[in-house]
Image 1 (cartoon, rainbow, N blue to C red):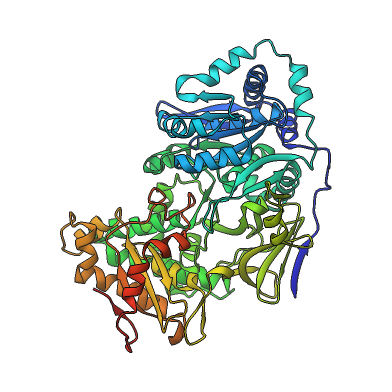
Image 2: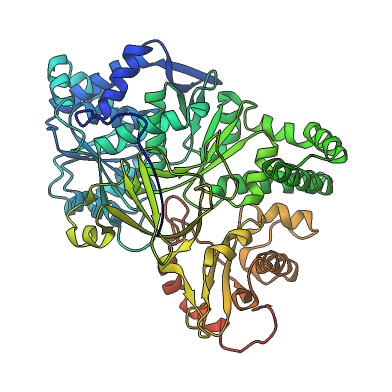
Length: 608
């Protein structure tokens, strides 16, 4: 059994809770800008001291409204400054937040609020309130509902004016490290969401140790980040709390349609994103160059960037010709992409799905070091992450301080340490099944290299076993196919079948540009595009590229393009854009069976 374990750098404090991170920050740098909020065409800074004042004022409002220490409070909202304000106000009031994804359906909202035992809920928008109203009658424990769009946060502050500072100080000090800090529900990619009990120590100890491990990222002069992935997810939630502890300025942009202008004005030094965002940046740049007649130049620049980064990582000398080409492309291509991201981004933390070496090397040559990491809700986000001083593109990095990772005999990744959650809420059977002693069984498969860098090779429950007995990890095929600009999503199928096939959807955002660049009507419908020979040839090209990395027995030999999209709204993707494989397999069972209606012997054939 292979195991890597790194001792904690920062001594544990079993009495500390999340509120101490803010209190300590205010003591050290009260005037430091911890946040910036949009104002006109720019941003207005909010200091640590001012944020603390607002947190305490809102905490008083919760106390005056009847929220008691230990109460569960649901919160459905987008990624804004107010999200973290409410988060810390609830911590200071002694309450436990139960975040709900902003895109959750009424049924999902009802399940999370009822299963958690929430007694109050905060909704940001009219739409959120409407979805909550649909299931309000099925939530008898809910005593209070506050609507941010009606100004209820301000009303709570007014209501709490008479509550003393001493009362909030008493409340914030009740919880110790072992107590529940938040109840975060899994995204539901493998079934009904389960509530993960994350403790104060999970956040405090992981944040304190991670801030040392990631100090180069967090101590860049004027360190700042712009959050745009949902703070309801543990990944962004962890970074929000880490930023407060480390003194990093945080801005928010809830609508990714306005991400580029926001990056241009905010000018962050590091980003937090999922791989799909990096794919979109690359594909959009490529198609924009293609439309301007510079597609060949962009592709040559991209290839040079990748080769340059690989040689640097391998410690090989850069040939003079490559140096000249790289310098030229830096002026023509790379600098423009850097400027599009604000011009100051030095690092990007990527998680939730494999990024792939191609994009990692491309952005590295842009001057953006992508620090890919690995973790789950159950590990309070990161268990491993590439570091500024210790990084390998294509891996998810070494183990963080205070964390241990081992590989079981079947390759399953198991984790223990300061980041591992306490239990599944009200689900002792699931909790017992998830642990081997104090090791959490992630369900993911991985491998370590000699230097202790972890790579993810698949998910245990997703391994396909063909009729011939061949084990196939879908991600190894799906990730490179999904990198193609016109591919939205892909699911590899073939369990107990004679060969491997794939269901493919098209990317409706990228498709019109690609169609226009290839002399086709940009207005073509998804169904028409799914049957178009040029589109099918492009998908075949992506599949051919993926097939080169696997054996013939593992290669995709048939595919079908579906005339629809898989989205969170359709119920086929989680809020972090992960595939709900079981739902897709159920909803598109007929399409899967059609792939096997006629046997094939050729390498790969598209199904019209």
